[in-house]
Length: 448
Image (tube, rainbow, N blue to C red; front, side, top):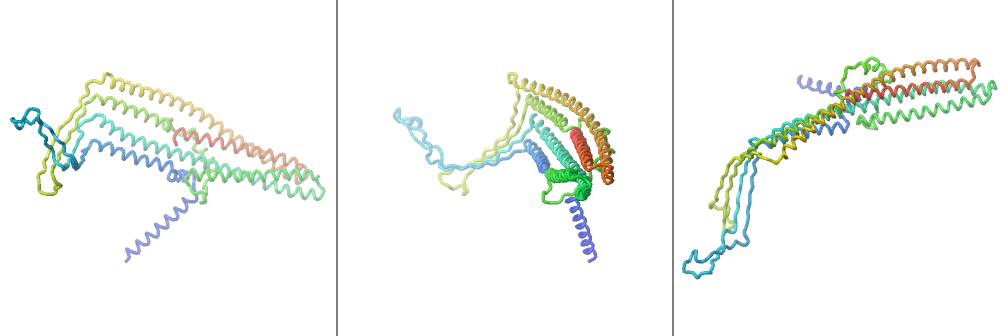
């Protein structure tokens, strides 16, 4: 009884843990968790994993070609018209007149047979190469699946960044809207009291309406970015999705783990890996062409039972006639008038082309690496510069609001400074987006 209670208790605790974990994973995600969720739920990854299963089955299919192949065949036939043979009558009756013939039927109306065939490959160079290639094909499928996972992670990462940037933009608009609303309320009161012209109040109203419209647009953009993230993750559009990290968290992480200081190689690039495997694939093609020079050998065994009847009585205890054959067959290539040689040389030329393509891709990736690192460094510097500009514009704007309350600065001047702040904030957002975009490209370059 105590063991039963313990099992129930363990089951309850385990269920609670699973429910808690599921609830957390299904609604709230860090960047890493979002990437992993995308890998586990994206349809492209599922298909890539199914390709690995197909490759595994292909290995066994190829292996089975070299194992014994056994077939059983049965046949029944009825001669509706038994063949008639005609011979010279003198063969059987020397007294027959010359030119006379004798007719007789050859065969029996019913016949049936059962045959067992077995074949076994002894040696074939192409089979050996094919078996090696099928295992390599499985490796290619695994590499393709890995690359697909990295692509999904990259798409989720970019979409995650876009949501954070869009929400930061909304927060900026909301902050400015709050201060503009306060300024607008005070300006209306001053205008109604006759302390300032109505035109000044109208200018503030225009600025207030403009920032309200900008905030509404920013909110809609944030919703679109969130739905795009759900799409890339394979997440339900109807389910709530909470992002655990903020843009500041991401920026701090980038500062700590600067992509320019990460030890990575362009040989990790997905295109480079696939090009290397293409080179290796053509190596197998060359081996297969060379294997055509080798002899091939196989063994066979055949056993059959045959019965012939004038009546359909095959199930009675009457004679069946066996036939058993076994043997070995060997094929030795002698000459193909140069066809095999030309195929080998074409395969060798293809490998040389693959090497040239690989060298060219490596140089292109090296150039891309240099270009992206330069762009990322410039983008980082631009983000810091635009951040400073935002801080300066915000201080100027806040001081202008305070001075407006004392009548030193007009409401029109405040709205002009507000536009300056908005422009600075917009430049900062664009700089952050550009920097994150370059980082995503660097991650893609290193297949991360």
